[in-house]
Length: 266
Image (cartoon, rainbow, N blue to C red; front, side, top):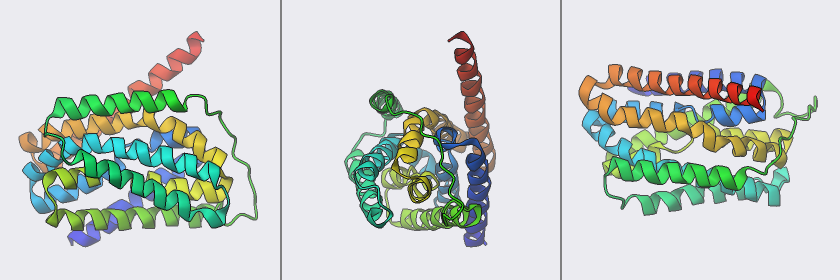
C-alpha cells in the first residue's frame, strides 16, 4: 500500500504541477520548481517509514541540501549552454547530478544546527541569484514537429523520472543516517527532469532562463523544511505536513504579491 501511495502521489502531483508550469512559461516554471514537491513527498514517506523524529532531524540537513540543488541547476545550465545538442544531453545530466552528490558528501559533516544550515542556504540563494541575474528571458519557440514539445510525452517523462527518484531516495533512507537521508531528500525530483525536457524541447537558452528564476523559488522550499523541523515532532506526520504546506503556499502568495507591487513601482 505504501509503495502504491508513493507512486500515485508523486506521479499525479508532478503531472498537475507540470501542466501548470507549461501554461505559465519558462520563467514562472523556475519559480514553481522551488515548490517543495520532492522534499515534501520524500520527507513524508521517510517519516512514515522511519518515524517523525528521524525525518525532522534529517530535515535540518535538507535545508543545507538545497545548496546541492543550486549546484545542480547552475552546473546543468552551464554545461547545457556549452553542449546544447540533444545527442550531448548526457553531459549536463551526469555532471549536474555529480555536482549535487559532491555538495551533499561535504554537507553531511555539517553539525545539526538549524541556524547554520539556514544561514548557509540563504547565502547560497543570494549569491546564486546575483551570479545568474544577467541571464536574459528567452521566449519559447514552438515547433509542432518536436516530440518533446508535445504535452503528453514531456509530462509523462517528468512524472516517471520524479516517481523513480522518490522511490530510490526513500528506499536508500533505510541504510542512511538522518543527515544523509535529509540531504538526499533535497534532490529536485521534479525540477531535474524539467531541465532535461526543456533542453530537448526548446534548447539551452530556455534552460538558462528557467534556472535564473530557480533561486527565488527555493524560498518556499526553505519555509517548508524549516516548518517540518518543528511541526513533525509537535503535531505528527499528517498535521505537520499540512502546516508545512500551508507555510510554503503562504510564502509563494506573499512572494507573488511583492513582485507585483515591485513591478508597479518601476
